[in-house]
Amino acid sequence: MTTLAKESTSALLLRRLRNPAAWSETVDVLAVLTAASLPWSTSLVGIFNALMLVCIVPFLDLRAFLQSLTRPICMAPIALFLLALVGTLWSDAAWGARLYAVNPTVKLLVLPILLYHFERSPRGHWVFIAFLVSCALLSMASWLVAFYPNLTIKPGGIERGIIVKNHIDQGQEFTLCAVALAYPVVMLVREKRYWLAGLLTALAISFFANMAFVVVSRTALVTVPIMLAVFALLHLRWRSILLIAAGLVAIALVAWQASPYLRRTADTFSSDYQLYKERGAPTSIGLRLEFWRKSLGFFAEAPIKGHGTGATRGLFEQVATGSGYQASAEVIGNPHNQTLNVAVQWGVFGIVILYTTWILHLLLFRGDGLANWIGLLVVVQNIFTSLFNSHLFDFHEGWMYVLGVGVAGGMVIRARKIAPKVGEAGS
Image 1: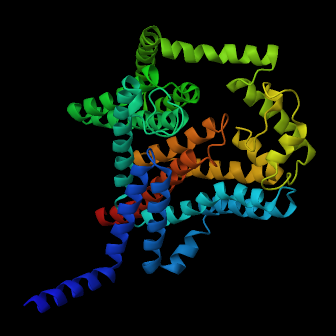
Image 2: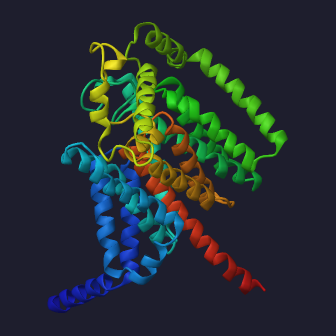
Image 3: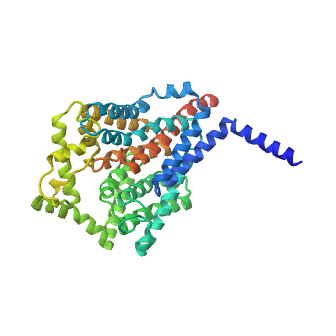
């Protein structure tokens, strides 16, 4: 009896291993785990993502996959990686620096794979739910750490309200979740499902409250109004826009009066600039202005093909001046602007591919529906925050882009394929 049971179990396991649907479900689960771990850990993201790619291989339809790679939405990110790889040939940097600079573009190769998989999987929404729940838990932990700083597990110095990573990453996550919830809230209200709409509204407000009273990111302060404006223009009537805008202004004024931390963060915009102009101090804004000024000079020296992959740090070392307490003395390998980061290394060629990638992905999400909204929001956020950071190449924000565009894009393509079949059946 025991032998029969073992044989039965082995046969069942073998059949499951040979079942493509089982492998597809496993890939879905690993994509969910990748999204859930992204707010908390870099190592887990790498592990789950590697396992996900391994599980896709056994039953990959090679012909269909290769055909999917010919789509412009897939070719553009691949082209950016290939340019980074080829750009190592004319760089003056050490080979270690060249290969290290290629690494941030490798994640872009996962984007076409996610598009391919979630074009076939009906479980893309699991990934977004997992990310939302994970960010909600992170928000709760952030409030807790704000009152009990020693509970943080972040290595190094204690940062207010930060349990892992940093305030920029956390601000990106909370901003994306809070604004993304606007679409389902409006749809639920129109369907008169007020309790669920109220629950999601409370969750969105909790994210905004954390950003107002616990961890304020200046990048978030700039990009939140832009993202909300995009939503309003796409999904609301003018009367609703005016009413909601008035409500948001009132809430912002209350938050401004109630949160000294928010006022202090906003005040640093002008104070940082003044310190930089008067003393050359290495303030946050001063450093960015210094990096951008020098990077424009580097671009002017090699405007067509750039200085090559990994050459940025060496260029900054050559023009560093002043003492260690001045912005002009800072040496960096990332100019904190995605366009300039690309332009210095790969010139006009890189800029064209970068903006082609963004534009193609924006056009992918032109329709209505939650997947279109999330995908559009991910691209818009990445474009505008990349004015102040190299967020397509940064680990955390880069993976937010790859997962968001890959999963949402696959869902959108899948929906467009199903729609004509439904129409034909109805006729």
